[in-house]
Length: 199
Length: 199
Image (cartoon, rainbow over all chains, first blue to last red; front, side):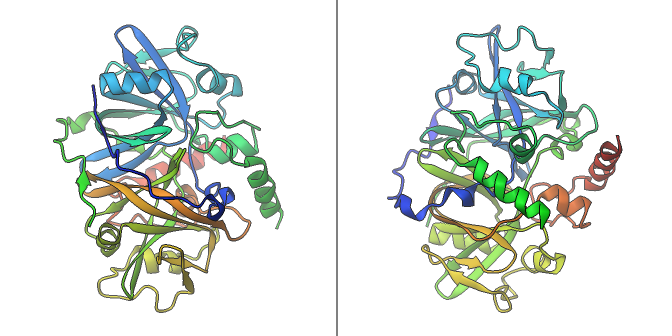
């Protein structure tokens, strides 16, 4: 079991100084992060994957603490990322993004194979797979940020990745309650960006 | 001075299992991260900003250890992010991305003002500002990943953010030697994505 780092107190915050629309200008992709505990496989949709170092090659991902995937990553110390393609149907995103893995087997109707870490890799709507082993888990309150060594990766097919902006603006997708950006006014962001498009 | 967490050994890597084109499918924006040490202000271009938690609101950013900005963030414990707009000129990006702050004052010809943390906030080509105080600094080899409480943020103007893909594909921008993604074949990625556009 991986221990949390970063449990020092947060600094005092005056929330009146924080404008959420500013945070909405940060650019993200959309990914399914998967993990495994024995024969139980689970995964969830996140927007928080980033390559944080090249030497050695490392990835970070932030995962909501209440999720089953979080529990599995802490226990097993590994996760896999499937990079979603732009044309991924909302139904597919919903299966991984809006249903709780504790009461529903997300992999029952999903095509996948197990990777080098044993974590499942999606065989649908996926441009690339990346597998990683956790080195550090930082306690971030609602979420844990996992920083991990990349141990395997493969490009599956050409195409545009699904971005968080495209998901909201074009597909009309919603933000899950477990996302770091939950509660932000993406509609406002959307209106402003559309206006920007016309200018 | 902030101490590094996450100094445990990396796991053994078989680099033949890592295909860099897979990592190129991750989506990023482009940002100038700034810091300050007394009257010395500095900043650099990064693609690694992400909101990692909502409660409390936290940001992470990965910064190359060799940079002056890295030294200042470790010493001062705070940084600011200026979110670049899509039409930011390459010359402006070059000023912050391809010159070393140790031998050149990047702020001499830049319009800015100091924020709540004392870090400089850009007044040019910027959609939003976010300021943060570091809680945890994770040692990632070539880079440090800073995880920080958001203490102030403001939307400056409407518009599309500059994405890393747009910077490479449309503007023909290059990857800095200090980036986590340095050495990756962005040209290959570009060709494939253009092909995707035509399909």
